[in-house]
Amino acid sequence: MGKLVVSLDGVVIKEVQITKDKTTLGRRPYNDIVIDNLAVSGEHAVLQMLGADVFIEDLNSTNGTYINGKAVKKQLLVHNDTVEIGKYKIKFLMADGGDYEATQVLRTGVQAPVPPGLQRASGFGGPSGFGALGGTASIKVLNGAAAGREVSLTKVVTTIGKPGVQVASITKRPTGYVFAHVEGAARPTVNGNPLVAETTQLRDGDVIELAGTQMQFINR
Image 1 (cartoon, rainbow, N blue to C red):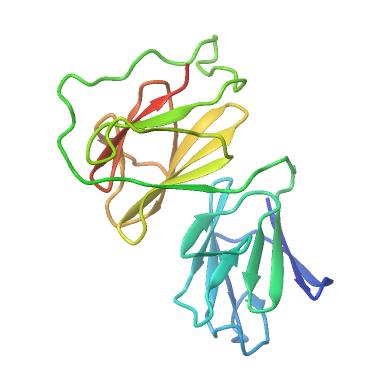
Image 2 (cartoon, rainbow, N blue to C red; image 1 turned 45 degrees about the horizontal axis):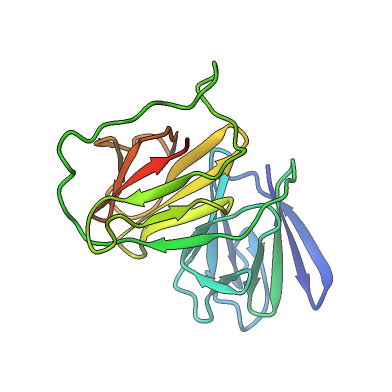
């Protein structure tokens, strides 16, 4: 499990283990993590634990929630991320550590039908079904204004979609790439099937659709 290290002006104030499905942050005393400062809203943000993943969501706070200096609405946290709320800094640490990088954001195009006959290509090599992560995988936009654009998944976490409509993430792990639903009432699809679980393992050739855009996952 992960933990949060809360500090102010470089001085650690408290450490909190993330053990609940939802952990609230805010100025009001009923929050799980209380930060008594006027720059912090009464109900500022919430941490949601989905399996091994932890997401943070801003609850329409007055001054916003920032991760590594960038304002966010909802985002998957990775090891060593720094959440900034007012003058407070909250370091997110995973129990097993790891060398992670920052998040890359890709905004996608508009809706169009799935090209006919488009199916999954061959899977990862190796007896386990997962290939080595020595190379860099990518996603290729199949429709809309950005059709043909290919984006390398060089970061640990890449978020895709349209904020406020439908957002998903692709996370690089030692066993492969994991696709997760982050935001939106409708769930994204993989090869035409709605994402039922919180996450699914991606295989070379998988076709993702969200916010009206189709993308193909490539990892050869």
